Amino acid sequence: MSNRARTSPIRTGLIHLALAGYTLVAIFPVFLTIINSFKDRNAIFRSPMQIPTPSTFSLVGYNTVLGQGDFAVYFQNSFIVTIMAIFLVLLFGAMAAFALSEYRFRGNTLMGLYMAIGIMIPIRLGTVAILQGMVAAGLVNTLTALILVYTAQGIPLAIFILSEFMRTVSDDLKNAGRIDGLSEYAIFFRLVLPLVRPAMATVAVFTMIPIWNDLWFPLILAPSEATKTVTLGSQIFIGQFVTNWNAVLAALSLAILPILVLYVIFSRQLIRGITSGAVK
Image 1 (cartoon, helix red, strand yellow):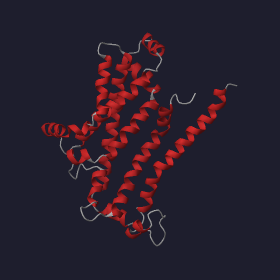
Image 2: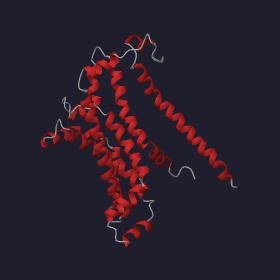
Image 3: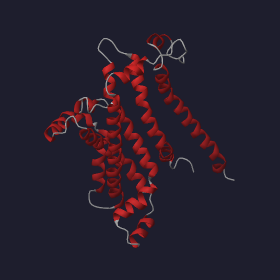
Image 4: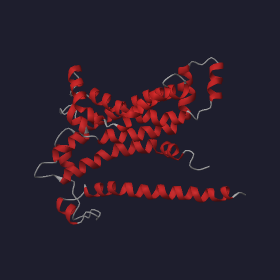
């Protein structure tokens, strides 16, 4: 047995240990937010690390959140925007990545670099131009405006990640599909996409978290009551001089749940996508 074969389980164990440690570090703030959302105001500041006791337990934050503002609509808006943006990012990003990785044409490399510029240049730099465009198109205070912006924001990263994975798909498999009479669309949807699912899940996770947590574009493009997202809706409890911490923590706890569900759905494929090639 080779040294490489003997050390492989150790390497795998170290990777799993590192992932477990990172998970604990990442989950601790979420845990802290949730337990403090079930306390009264004094307990939040007096003993923030302590689990709620019968004397400190309180649902005043959740009562405030559910009683003020229409948080059901806010959650619905965030969910619609996030799911639609992820779908469009994966669809158009995967199609562009397939074209760049599969077909050779003049300017292929320059086109790929041009599309990757979006990773380096924040889309917020174009806020004024984006707002002017949305006003001209009559899309201000609509969820469509947010979906379009987030789709444009996520496509460069999707192309960058997916194109590298698609280059690893066997050319023999694609050529066999062409010999069998499959169209390029059929090859893309039936042969290529199933093989890059871990990469698709990676892109989905990296796309959905910034969208769900974003405050800037909902505040600029869709601040009306009917189009508020959950992050923007939570700001009603934060004032210049007084902040209702019970309501803020309760709103954040409720906002965490959907994103955790989506993360769990994509987590297995995400780990495969991130660690692909790391362990042999």
